[in-house]
View 1 (cartoon, helix red, strand yellow):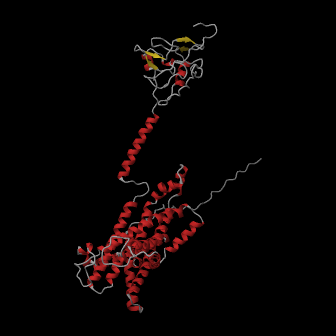
View 2: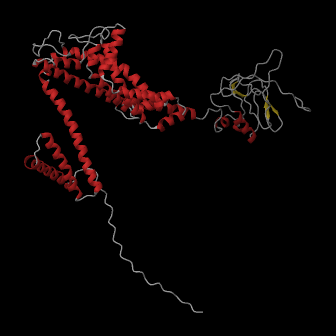
View 3: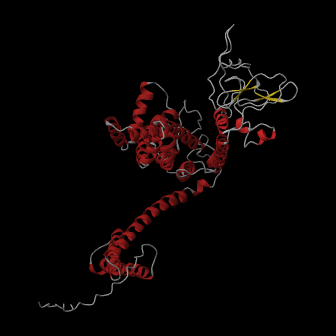
Length: 532
């Protein structure tokens, strides 16, 4: 038999190209190439826009020039970035530029509004009387040194306080209802709330005017204006608070309910504290909507040039309505007062915003210093209380020290207590020692109260001592009282290996020490064949 060995020819393999290590792409922060690409794209876009608007195309206008420059800038910047980066990096850089541009435009618009208002009202803001006088003694032709907006500031604070007292509890309660109790009615309420967010302010003012003034016959006042402002604020607060409460993790409520907390306690102690910062933002949004309303105040509170502190009687004016009345005048002093009143209104909104952020700005679980100290003190008290509960109970003889020192074996002492004898000695139980079956001994009455050892050392007696020792602080039950002419009732019979002292259940306080009282039990009947 011939064995043929086949030798496999070596397969020639092409050398595998070395794989380049993965280099993480830098996400944020300026780079040298990025800054150069940004500057080059801006200059290139400017040149192209100048050519288009000046030489090549019949374009004109500053707005068109700015839009053309921005579009060309994004295009050139994307091309320059693509020379060094991949497509994902190009999209990331371009979108970053777009977002920064949008943020810059919004901030510029806000700065323009605030700066223009402060600049036009600078003349009125420099007079102190502008903040503590009203317009009762000032006219359109009077200089800025006479009159002010104190009446409008007072009216605004009173109206917005009334609106907040109505809106905050109702709005938060409705948001909690929509979040915690789903159903058909909840969907209906949510639809109504969303529709009310687009309610015109003049409609809210007309509704309150028709009901409060025309139907009920009440006069125009700050209270009616507060009602109208609350109608405008309520849907904003409900909608924003509902969105915030949806962001609370469901595991928190599940954990609270698993611990046995009812639904109202879970909402009050878990859901609302977790969403506190967002709820404060919701209240601020509603306040900003209501504090700038003009038409509802004009319809429900009227107009006055004097300060009115009573929200129930008399007309009242707000800062937006005062601004509207001031800027309608052609006099420069009145226009300056109008822009000054607008600046005061912005400052008031800013103060309310800061207060709301201080109240609700802390995150979930964060406490103030006072709350932290109070929590620490409560934790220390709880720890001390738990240590007392876990401490071992007090026993008559611990580790045999007291028993051995007094001449009594701790292993054979039963549930009896040490009583004060008349002659100053101590007696264990109240009786003399008789032999019992099983090697144990019983205690009978001994005149003189001498100290008597009970039983003999042994495992059975030690087990009986530990079994009969009551818990610390728990008094033993008293035996039932004996009827007239009947012997005292006996407790359960003791096992053969136990020692009994003073009768079963004869001690009022087995755990007590000195001062305990004993009720001597009846002598046991002698066994047959034995004599006393």
